[in-house]
Image (cartoon, rainbow, N blue to C red):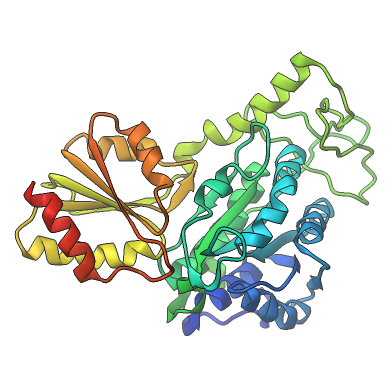
Length: 383
């Protein structure tokens, strides 16, 4: 790897910079974006750093153009990324569906802030969780990862690129304003130890190549523009050659494959963490920055003698329902803690109908203090 990449060892940086440096290590060589708080520092940092490693940075006229440029760059063989926040993410929604339909591997960083509309540009939120899953119309699957620490902003950025390449899907990194500007210790491993994946490449002749013909993996090999392969890329329902073919049978065949390549590999994608679940009677579920406060509350409650455990989904989509169901089998109640009015809460209720599922929600942009959480949870635990 280039000596111009971040050095191995211990660094002190915020989440936006950690994400940007990790993207470079992951092989990102194209970034298109438009400034928006609190994600602007990612673009600002990459505008300086990408040219140093032979990459390209483009400030586009808006977020719609940004994601379209990223999709195009992916088809030239570049590992490509954009970064935005809620209002910009809304503008990208239609093209998320295009990325899914054309199977363009790309990474979308959404540094969540208070909404709806312009909302609170400098304050944190977890209000984009369902939007990440259902940005665009139609049936398709994406992958979304939610870091809770600056170290994870670094690690999960690399993982986002790997997943996008492995399954040819848009992968979203759902950070928030707290993590974006929080300074923490980040350990960068030796570059040789970092596993980097690339898309599966064609193994047939150019004359035989069909760009959307998949094997049992459900992920088609990918040729790039300019290599001499002749094929079409369209958002329309298409056949294995990429040409539009509008028929009920073709559409069902295509859409089922687009969904199944993620759904049938969900157990390979899921990342999650459990703590103190062996004797737990009540399970806390929190993710992103909210998990930071929940961990502190968990420790205090355990010291008070309460039998409480915690489940932290790192992968939000596809949601790790199998592991949660297994843990929830041994508890009576699940308390979901979110910085929204209950987005993952409804998923948990559906996944765990045998449990009593409660919600602690806080909007406004400020994390609850551990004392607030303990006060609320103590009441739940004494019921």
